[in-house]
Amino acid sequence: MFLRWRHEVFRWLNALRRDPSPHLRWSSQAEEAEAMKPIVRQYCLITGLYYPFVVADRFVNEHGPALMVMLSVTLAAMMFAVYGWLALRKPTSRRRLLTINLGLNLLLYLNPVAFQLLHFERERLIYFLFLIFIYAVTGVSLWAVALSVGVALTTLIAFGVLGPGAAATHSSMLMLIIIPVIVLIFNAIRTSMLQAVRAQVVAEGMRNEAQKLADCDALTGLPNRRSFFTAFEAARAAGRGFDLLLVDLDGFKPINDIYGHSVGDALLIDVAARLREVCGEAATPSRMGGDEFAILTHAAMSDDALEDLGARLCERLRETYLLGGVTANISASLGMTHADDPGMSASHCLERADYALYFAKQNLRGAPVVFNARHEADMRNFNLVDQTLRNSDLDRELSIVFQPQVDVTDGRTVSFEALARWDSVKLGAVRPDIFIRAAERSGLITDITLHLLQKALRRVADWPVDTRVSFNLSARDLRSSLSIDNIIRTVRESGVDPSRIEFEITETAMLSDFEQACEALSRLKAMGCRIAVDDFGAGYSSFSYIHRLPVDKIKIDRSFVVQLVSHPSAIQIVKTIIELARNLNLDCVIEGVETMDEMDKLRQVRARYVQGYLFSKPMPASEVAAWLAMEQRRIAV
Image (cartoon, rainbow, N blue to C red):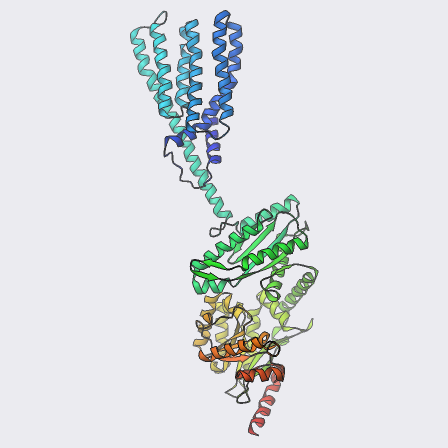
């Protein structure tokens, strides 16, 4: 019985406590009374189950008026016990708990009192000892224990001294001394039991806290990566259809790097709240790490419904964030896929959603994309390109072409951009955007960078000393200290003056890890190399971070150039960027110039450095010398 009471106390307290903190204390009588509630309820249950047998005994052994008296007090005790057991199923006030406790004590007390008054039997005085024990263990509070035990003890002594065949006075005095000792022992048992229960509750609270930390993201409170995979496998095991959405924030890293981690953390917390709000009861968002989130829907959706959910998520996440004095604006790209194939593993499902996300970030930044049959084909092609790259002789199959960057004021080429080409033995000529993207996703890009840089620098060594080369670095190159070490070593071993080498980085690559990019670029700059920001205007264009980088040049993206003729505002934007660059002592190259109309517009804003098909397509290394010689003859004339 003790063990069952102890278990019930523990179970009830665990259900009662909404806060999983393990710091539980009996800080008041009310809390102790609440802790005793399951014990009192078990007390009522045992009494209610026991007393039907007592009722039957009354009918057998009692007769006449004695039967009526004994049956009344017995039925009253039984019914009150049932009432108490039912009443304590719901939350109960301390006063009501005390009332039930003391009421049942009283009715149990009246049964042996009535019996002794009707049929005094000294042997049955032991029932009062049982009552004293029960009162000591089940009392809601110490004063309830003292009152109940005091009454029972007084009655026991009174019957022992005053009843027929009364015991000797010294026996009564001995009883008066021994029984309180027994009561104290029983009360100590009660206290020890409560302390043991408290210890178990504390231990369970700590386990719950540890489980929460293991399953929840500490910052946002969302389920974490571990919990996500558990939920994924549970949904798959249940055989129900569901959908997977991957969310990647566009523009989070610049905010985190520029304003600090406290603002970045506040932004992530707000993003998590918005995800919960939009998902509602239809889906569960999780934080996978950094600024990446995953969402599992609770049921399979149609393409239209999934696109609608994605659109609402993007719209909500695009709204302005107010972060303690900082106003931030970001967007989110979503990759979504159906997980209706029971044979599809979690990794395969994630791969599909990740590809849709990659497609969104490359083509529809800030928008949702549902994985489709075309993406499936593209992904297979990507895997084919990836595997072919891994098994190719890169030194033999990779080559470099060069596109001139022209100073239109002086009419001469000041630099060539080195562009990669891959003529695969197995696949033939593969477009640069395809194999570079595959190399970046697979991690092969760092090896390819070294192969191409070595080829480019061997050619540059034969050029005029005032002609530079621009070479593109990837985000993986910037994030890897080993890759930067290898690049520096390659430059030094080439014998080319580092001041003739210009490393180009895109805004996206730079902002993927701003602090690491700063460190990598500073090392290259310290060696004497120049730094250029490529595709300026296509990403998160901001001079607020340019001044924090060792940048020498910015390259305005062709997306502005194509609008020069048809959109008058475009030329004002280009003019503003050129003037700002000039004020910061930065060179400014306009990329993708293909027509004389575009060139005429650029002359109006005093653009000096231009690159594009209007001047030359990318040329093989063997044609560079002829190009420069022809240019020298033209200038001489």
